[in-house]
Image (tube, rainbow, N blue to C red; front, side):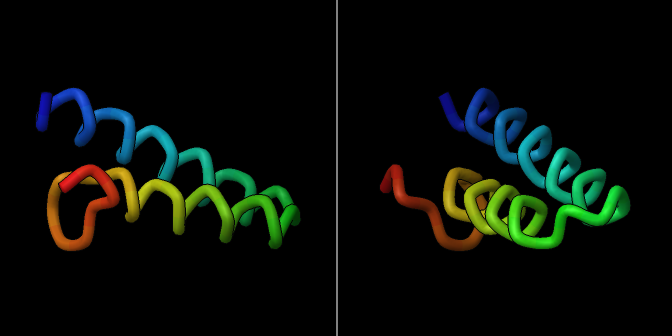
Length: 47
């Protein structure tokens, strides 16, 4: 389960970075924050 959450978190953060590069600041920041909250390392909403 932790590996699956890690993969989802990586996808969300990468999508957030791509959005930032494309100029969509709010959407990019939101995706990065959600990716950090979902990920098993550090802070996770699934503890």
